[in-house]
Image 1 (tube, each protein chain N blue to C red):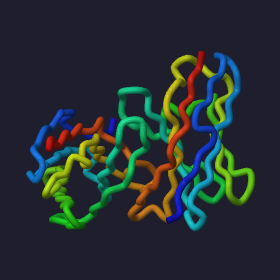
Image 2: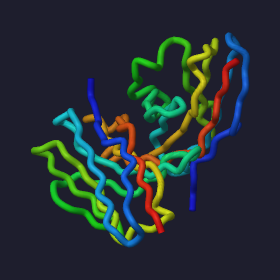
Image 3: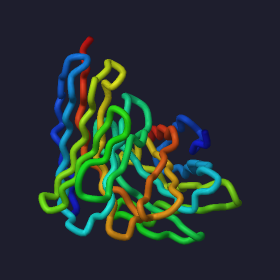
Length: 114
Length: 111
């Protein structure tokens, strides 16, 4: 069964450093998403992406964040200058369409900012 | 601010019983509603979705939607210890470009 994959599974970085989280969405899916979940809190939407453009972004997704689809398979989330409060699980998801938008999640990348 | 509210629990049921999980949402324009299961330390796993008023059944799971009351529920019949997890209610925004999640209800099924 096709699934969303994410690398790395765990990333440790120093405050102020740049990190890139990588995702490979399900191959026939057209919509891609990033969510984060701070330990013990709810899953929060960051951004959605379609046709090489951002479709929607939340207030969390400020200028420190960017997304890119550098090739036909990868979808990346970059955090330019990490802060302690960026420590969280970051989930990538993908869906075929938007109505309904059944989103399938990857296993996540645990980001720890020291 | 669009909100999705769930009772955090824990909800404890004996093996074989029916577990009932509830969710309310604030955005009347929402069209699609989802239930995810999340085991500790794992990612959300889609159980089922519903977008029409009424009931939708899939195996031991039944989702119920009442748009007038802005209420979604999930029934799990014949609960098993392996069903012990946190159940997340998620509501799509009107454009279908984002899911808004509740905090989740923790279910514990005892054998």
